[in-house]
Length: 350
Image 1 (cartoon, rainbow, N blue to C red):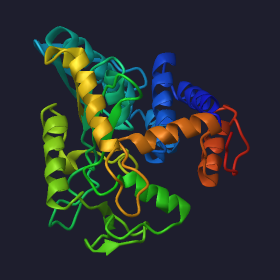
Image 2 (image 1 turned 30 degrees about the horizontal axis):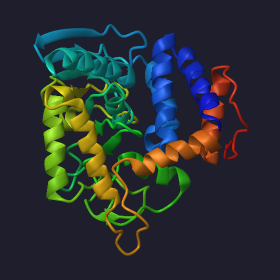
Image 3 (image 1 turned 120 degrees about the horizontal axis):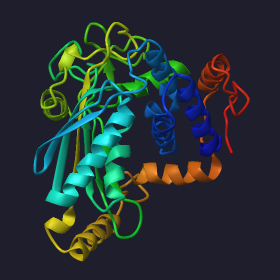
Image 4 (image 1 turned 180 degrees about the vertical axis):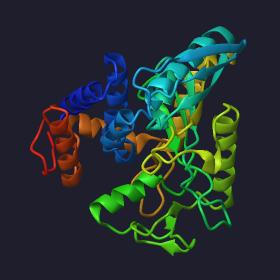
């Protein structure tokens, strides 16, 4: 499906769900941007649950967002329980503005919700010549190392580094072996998951996505440690709920999620001459790309390069939409009198 058509459909659905024009466009663009990059776990598959939570008043359709400067390089932001993408983008805009003044800007966010792909916000800073940072905690979907039950979120972090030529270098990763959305996609498609992704209700490894109750930390104790740090920086530092206190997006409909984020921007020009920074990035990237590939690999890729290639391919050829998701979105559109821009139940391509 053409990305413009998909984004237009999402915008119209979100407008019918109560969002204003600008906020609906922000959320829609973030979802389609994730699908363009091949990150379906944070793409339009999230649209139905966003609409459900908007309808139930668990996400504020017209949030009163409040920013408070707390120092030369810091601020806090109360998201007013708005859509995570709307809240976090406002925070990143503030972080970029602060970094323009002080060299570094950090904004701690509370009163927010699931914000989609962290890299989308980090890229916002990189496209303005800044190093972008985006961290968020999440509902408890990951077991701590040595634990049997979920106690921390998958707690992603993203860092985007601007380049003189070409798209920014983007690290966008969960601190768990995979995002829980990967398990959800496997459930939807009726496919097994690889060993080493998840555990069942008894804390035993499983390849059955229906039995999976939590994912495992990336690299064992290392991913667990990273998840803890993100929980502190995005959750505790922002004054948000932490750990098992965070409400579950698909299961808990009694209260808002209570999610926090940390958005940051760094102006490289405050540390060295701009040409030295951009030249250094290109030199390092060139060294990595020149590394002889190991057996089984065709080349060495930069962080985010596979997703950037997917973005270019999907921009050219269209975004594939799986059958079941197409039917679900078409049904949601029919309910809200928003036409689905393609036949339901068939993979949609260009």
